[in-house]
Length: 478
Image 1: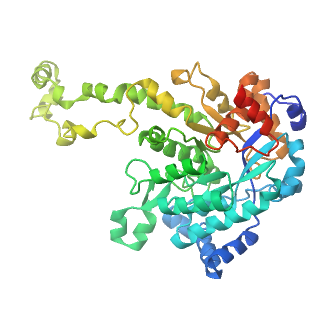
Image 2: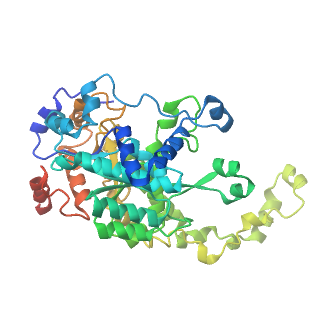
Image 3: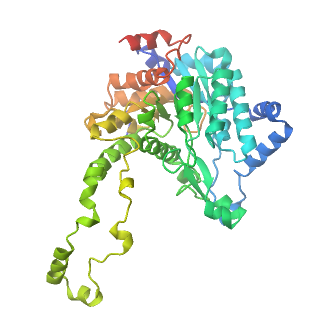
């Protein structure tokens, strides 16, 4: 599937005329240290309540059977290579090794903090996000020329999202924000049955159609603060990813599933129409689903736009002609079983929809197929890992609808189990060039150009004072 690259990461970097920006590395927090921040912010009881919530993520074997709860992630961090394991917890060490890794600048997402914005305890959720944000901001402050951490933003309500956006960006001076991809909300009908039913029955709010809240104030605040929203939420434990015994079964595709649900929601609810300045980054799910979603949107528009939809209007059926054809061609088995007219369908099949509710594209204002490309392609960026062969699809304008080149972001995912050796990441990414699947220009966009454009879209000074400042400025002038 790939052609091995014999050059080392540092050799590859030395041969490039552009920097390498890693838009999705990871820090592994020392949680006991992070909990001291939580205690300072919300008191000792907050730490106890946070730990109590964490314990619910590790159900007993019997609970997994009774509630079909997923097998939780296990053995997720590098242990064979102690140097690598320490590098993703100690920024000073990571900074020292960046030439060896072939990276010029890194955006570092949390690990323990990845799920802080999903804490179910309303009082603890915001405090936990703030604790991890403060911990990571202080940890990386000294090395801002080569790395920057991402802030965790809860999204249960617009108010709590805006509060932590303000604290992270204005208070902690963080430049990257990671918003929850969805909020798991209880079903009202289940809540009426019992607290136990409410706990086990839920739906997923992706901030678009049917959300109980208007999230436009959140998107507006991102514009005002100059931050591009990124998302790094998984879907393990949801839908078909609830195996009690097999972690791999739960893990495959789960980031892509979360990204696709949110991206679809943002597009169809018109967020990219109302906020043209915003760029959205969906991390670690690859670009294959982005290519597929664009194709699906185009295909559905062609058959389900408001004008085309009239072809399926139940009122257009010529019932008299249908009856004549039935009488002429229906076999005896149908004649014997159907005593009523065959065109007297149940009410649910006959329509009865409100004519004003038929246009699924109204919120995003799609009037021609080209609008889809304009509101999708430059607004959405898709985080791809080095070993993902589907990344090459993103650059295939001959295959993608509307001749699109999907915007990819190179993400190393260093710190997690799928990176066995940190020095192997850039060589793995380079295999796409060596194997002829992407060009040198594509590779430049993948590891540098797209990231430079994404991070500076709302913050032109994002890379000011960093090791890549000059290269980004040259790119902007080109």
